[in-house]
Length: 321
Image (cartoon, rainbow, N blue to C red; front, side):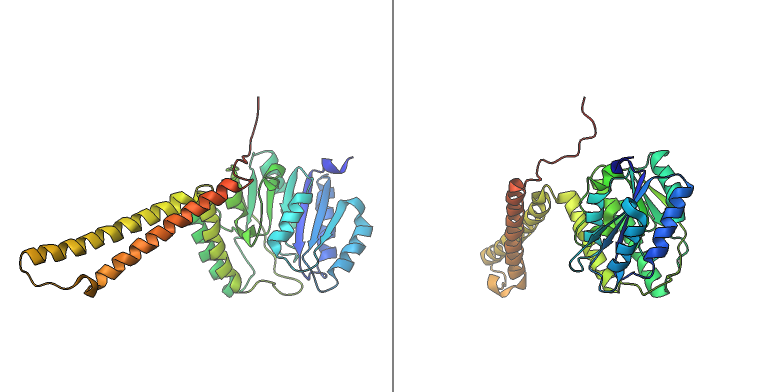
């Protein structure tokens, strides 16, 4: 059978996880054999400083063409690892799975059926019962609640590492920066709206320690703002900056006219008055005008940059007749 006829590809980003790799590979192999699935494991070593790559080389000798591996020169992050894994994947259905054994390969057949038989484009795992400390669970719940509100995608766990995709999905999206948390949003923006959820078993970490600290929550919200803005205004930045700039310009200009007009009226009617430059409102109005012009110019420059982009007329086409 040709390599490009695999039923599934399992993309496994990893960083310093040498202890868990043999057990994970054997687990995936057992599940796929029991369900008569042809498969490939794609392990992406994100610049590990332990013996992870040596273990991968040993596993390669054991599993042959069923194991493929990519090694980064340094640590680039999970999004970069997923991007390279997606690029290499050849399976009909593509899975992502963390290497720490907290994701269960036993979920593979059920999630694959949701893609093949129920027609989903993407199925995300939901770890209803988690074995993480409260310091990790509580911020995660708030983060997921915010992501649901902003994106309109009804998922309980955006950041679950166990997901599966129709092959066309991973070939159509670009994961960069820290956007691995928002792959469902990227997929929806690309036109893949059939997004499902599957409750999965979460296991306590068996080896090593978590590689993520509290700083990921800050990065997560900044990335959420970025992906939301790009999805709504990425192709037309003038709609956002131009509208906001015009509004501020009109408010500042109107306020300035009112301040000056008020002074003239009071002068004509011999009423007590203050100098225009003595009123804080006048300076706030001038500030609004300046900011309005700057925002408008930012939108204009964004349109010029977008017009010069090679991606400006790149669209995903479902079918041609």
